[in-house]
Length: 88
Image (tube, rainbow, N blue to C red):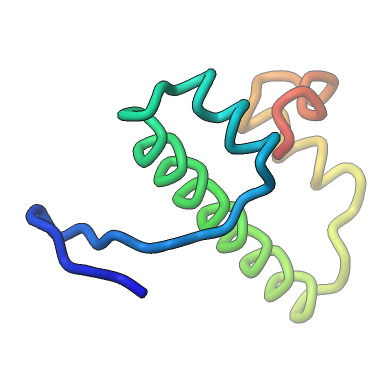
């Protein structure tokens, strides 16, 4: 169930494990919870989009090589060795 709110937002009801919700509230406070969840969902959708791009690339050209992955990591993060620290 959802209801329209000002500013092009909607209220929605989601179920979360109680321990996760408690940890989120500790981290964000009650007022920051919506913003935190919005940012997390937006980030996940971006990661899903990247996965789709890679899948399409691999379907057309075959799997990425280790050298291509390392080159992409260097371009994105500066060093291939650090790439694992930035992975989602």
